[in-house]
Image (tube, rainbow, N blue to C red; front, side, top):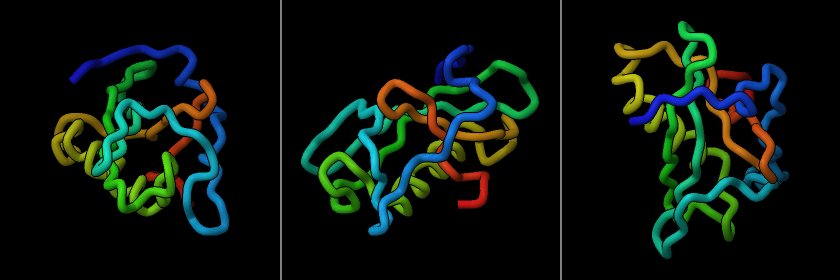
Length: 116
């Protein structure tokens, strides 16, 4: 697990990920790996009790829950929740603030802790 201080991802007003009417993500995400069975999306967890500290996450999404490179919102949220649980050891290690990923190089909030 790596801890980083990403100045561009710590944007306080990053927009929410765009979601299409069919509930698939309506943008090209920062994909780390694409296989016939899974899609792995890069993300970062901002830590609530440590300003400017974040943890790199890998969101593993079943390909069956994707349309091309665009995951269904529920599958992305499930993957984000699992990755946050691993990174925080169920909330015993860090208090999560928000999860961000990149769309076209710009940070976007994955609505895990915000109202979707």
